[in-house]
Amino acid sequence: MVSSIVVLGGLLTAILTSSGWPDVRETFFSAESFRTNFPDILRGFWLDVKMFMAVEVIVLVLGLLIAVVRTSRNPALFPIRLLAAAYCDFFRGVPVILLVYLVGFGLPALELSGVPSNPIILACLALSLAYSSYVAEVYRAGIKSIHPSQIDSALAIGLTRIQALRHVVLPQAIRRVRPPLLNDFISLQKDVALVSVLGIAEAFRIAQIESLASFNYTPLLAAASLYLLVTIPMARLLDHITDREEINA
Image 1: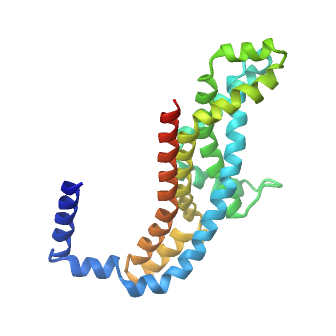
Image 2: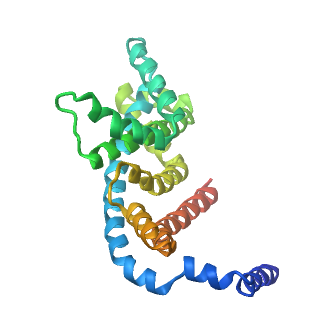
Image 3: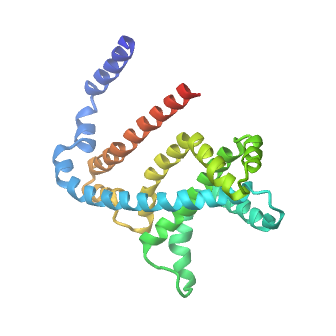
């Protein structure tokens, strides 16, 4: 603890006494710029939060459905299992920002009937496609970690396979994968900023515009502080859940 304080104190002293610190302070830590731009950035961040919450619900449901299909052993579902595997392979392999470009600009360009043109909806769709593939694999790992004897026991007491899946397998599987699920949602919360490439006036986009207009990067740090206010509590919650899982193991 003492050594950490000494090291951090030394680094802080070196930064604050450097010859370039006054310029860095004015460019990145301007109180005036922060005070002027923070209200607009905060309004943009509220849009980020709403998109994140909507996408999270979609990802939880869609990811679970894909995982259940992939772990099914019903021969009749083989074509659907194949499609589910291809879905995960494709959307996990494409960079999220490229997927945002493809969905955000590619779908409207097709001019198909019924396809939404609202960039916010398209951005949420792109994020849902990417993160549902990640989450599906997390769910699948949890389902496969349940020993087959538990399913046999459930069938032996008269439950159907669907009832065994619902009442025996899924509750345990979801409990086991809560830490990696929360980790994915921390990543999702940050990746919401990628939708700025579609011109959506969310927190990062507003901060970027203000920075380019004034050649001062303080608005970007103001946006970063809002993301940290959400991700740090989520990270601590993840630590708490992980510690509790280890104690109960």
